[in-house]
Each structure stands twice: as C-alpha cells, then as structure tokens.
Image (cartoon, rainbow, N blue to C red; front, side, top):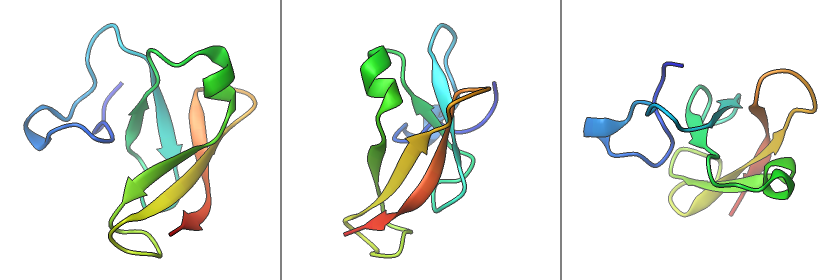
Length: 82
C-alpha cells in the first residue's frame, strides 16, 4: 500500500509494515491512509471525525468519514463539522 498516513510526520508519512490502514475517499483528506491497526471491529464500523485545516470550517474543523460496507477498507467522506 502506498500513500501518506493521516496524522504522521512529513518525514515518515508512508505506511508501515504490519499496520492496517483504511483509505480516505473524497473530501479534504482524499487519498490519505488512516491507521486502524488497534481499532476494534466496533470502532471500525463507526464513523470518524478527523481534524483538518482544509475543510469547510478551516482550522479546527473536522471532516466526517464513514466506512464502506464491502470491499477494501475505505472510509467515504460525508461532510464537515466545526
């Protein structure tokens, strides 16, 4: 898997061996990978609000992502919140 990991330092932003990632699809974080290695099955089935400065609400805002039901581990953007 290639790409940058959400929340990682720029110097070490690539995915790491042995970790589990979900791809963020659409919205301000499109294409980033979300590390879900230590998330429970219940947590992976829930949506997540991720901080971003490039969303609708600027610095301090969050982008909402919900998991897809089938296929590769992906989270689809469903909007921004303050």
